[in-house]
Length: 119
Length: 158
Length: 170
Image (cartoon, rainbow over all chains, first blue to last red; front, top):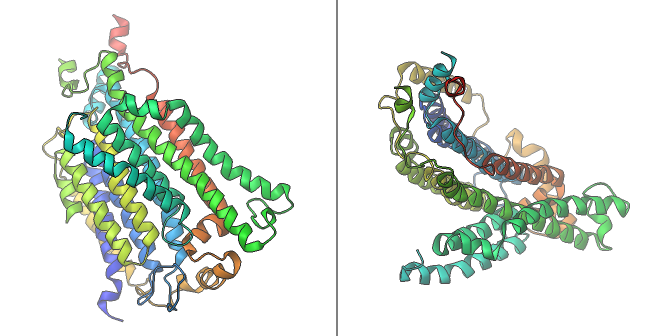
């Protein structure tokens, strides 16, 4: 039990908070999508590091290896990465449409256009 | 970018290599890291590199959009029909044991076919993403919008 | 570090490139954490395809973020408080890399012992992905297809400017 045994969680938390900050502060939509990507990777690291065993090996069976890391998180994250690219693509498509409709991809500018319409 | 000799030579060398590596990752996925997802993405990346070098029109002559749509659906259909085949042959949904006599061979055949379905779907959907985003610019110019224009909200409000 | 720079920079092209580098670093991290398949996927998807997609979109939108500001103290405070709470909670989590963690007790030993007997293939990730949890993977393939259809629906109609109500009135 050392302080460093929780280091993986702290790295995850730092990355997660960077992504979170990027999402809530930045008005630019592409920046928001990139922030979402950072947030996503932090969750991936959380899962993968939970499955890691110190001294373990990649879960591909072979001679002379007794301890393997847990394959289950790898499977879950493998699918999550590909779903992540799918959501990113849908978000980018929405961004393109918003840009064409409003002439901007910035939150505040779009709010201003909406306000003009209501007035 | 067809005029740049370096790019063309390097791409000619790289694209077959990338496709070969994609196939290796696809069908060797049972023995080494790899599988349908990675192979599909690699294959699509090779096509995207081709489009970067030779232009979207040439790329679409090789793989027409209609083929991409059909392949995307066929991949999922292949996956689902392997599952249904298990039901028809007397097992559960996505149960690979009834497919062949030997249980290990049946499992391996099922895994390979299912991974192939995933690979086809992922490759064609990634190509579809890129195709749609790349075509959009020409479309919006044709519609009289200028993609390079600065944000024109301020100008509109005047 | 790289992630922080991604947030700070206002040039979207620079941010995209840094995001690609960040993805590669994460892929290397996955490789050291014994996740070969995941590292391969992250390198191909995160560093390759998502970068290409963001670049393709940057051809359609302005390259620079408009506003100067973009840093707000309340948001920073929220983020720091949340992060501190999570760090506090992290002390109750199982330690990194031990064999007796809860996550290692349940299914993993079964997969590790039975994969070769059941399937005859050495790559456990492929076995779990395509056979033990194949319905999961099928749903995932359907998600990909659905995303493809959604992007197609969003981007295939011809672009047109949104009708302003004021113009309609006049």
